[in-house]
Image (cartoon, rainbow, N blue to C red):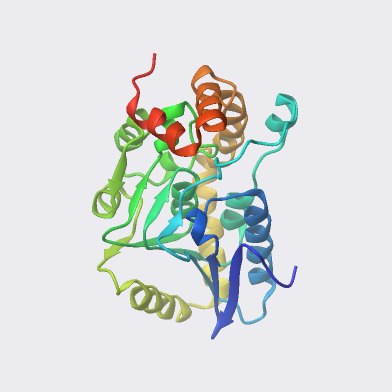
Length: 264
């Protein structure tokens, strides 16, 4: 895939820059964007000069999560259970370090995408969280417990579905560093320059070894199970009610119900 419709791809002095490019939809993750992202990660890994991948989002959001603005394709539940998303695995498995440069909203699937990256830098106004918990959908890849400093932090975010600021995200371990607006690019570039001083082979080995630690803790196993659970929870009464309101009254009405209504 040489060109993309939903993201921008460029290589400059060993840095592969991938920018999610659906700003009108707050870079919501639709199927096409996810396919293009996986292709871009594979392309970056194959690039002779590639040393580091920097992942960002165009517009005022990193990503608002999976695209819930339209009705899902009518697929049997069995197919949905087996049709697991693999873009986070592509980032995890890539030999290249992937840095998330977050400037704005990173929630739901967008939060997972940001914290799955090897390093995550964010501007002060950025926000993180899993508000999709409010309509009964746990994150469809269990990344959060493997990056938070405490399981209590993961419990707080998932039980409440709250959104937190970048400083709180850093305190919880989701973010490496928080910087002022306008300083993100320079901060990421400085980190890239530090990484370039380490031989690419050594970086790849270190990443593989650190991934191995996560695997012994169950990262891939829980990720697969959570995808199955995620497909099933989309059939819950809360998820069905959300879709009913969205289809009858529009997405904004569904979001208001989702965030403002107590549920049994």
